[in-house]
Amino acid sequence: MLFAATLCLGCGQKRVVGPAPDMVAALDLRETLEKETGAEGKVEDKAMGTGWASLKGKFIFAGNPGAPKALVVDKDTAVCSKDGMQLFEQSLIVDESSKGLANVVVFLRKSSRVKNESATEKLVMDQKNCEFLTPVFAARVGQAVDVKNSDPIGHNTNISGSSFNQLIPSGDSTVFTPSRETGLPVSVTCNIHPWMKAYAVFRKDGYVAVSSGDGTFEIPDLPAGEPLEFQVWHERATGRSGALDLDQPELKWNSKGRFKITLKENEVRDLGTLEIPADAISG
Image (cartoon, rainbow, N blue to C red; front, top):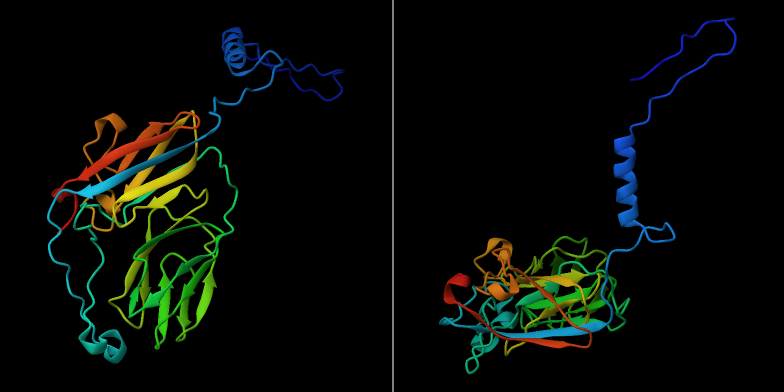
């Protein structure tokens, strides 16, 4: 119950009675603080792992990729279709012998700590024969990307989600430095030659990999001793926004293309062969 003193001019000293203490609430608060604080009364940090580890694996496509689709090249044909050269889409690249699937993106969704604070190596993204030589590439936020044009004609490189939309003359190059990370890969196009398309993914911590021609990938120097959640994406995955949904219950893989794992210090965890069924990739 609250008691209030009556205010009166010239009535002498005023007395204001505050709220009566709630002893139950006070005891609950004290118990909560004792759980969250150490002997010295300081709030303890949440448990965090120590050391570093690596994760690797291999994606293979279990279906029949079929013949690649020919692209319609109707501009600058003297260069883009020189001597009858035909360009094909690069959205589904499967190694003929190993069935390895290239250009699968795997990245850590959130990191509590990072071993290497920045990347100093400059990456190269080249355009030649009127196509992007790297259909899917990854870079770190703040890492320089040398966007080149090795063709005898100009290209206009447009990186979605950024202000980079540059005309790059023949044989020239310009540097793009991503300033923010992408939640998922974003498209890279050429406004002059609309059949040209690639994807780029930028992450702050650098914990990202793109599977190579044989389907293999590896992400080194990951935080060990704590739960990690990874996102898996492919341009033609049937999941929402390119999420690659696989039947991997031991990894708690879900329909959003995410899986969870905890690595031991100095461990190199090999997920082995991750088989992608035909119905996980759109036709």
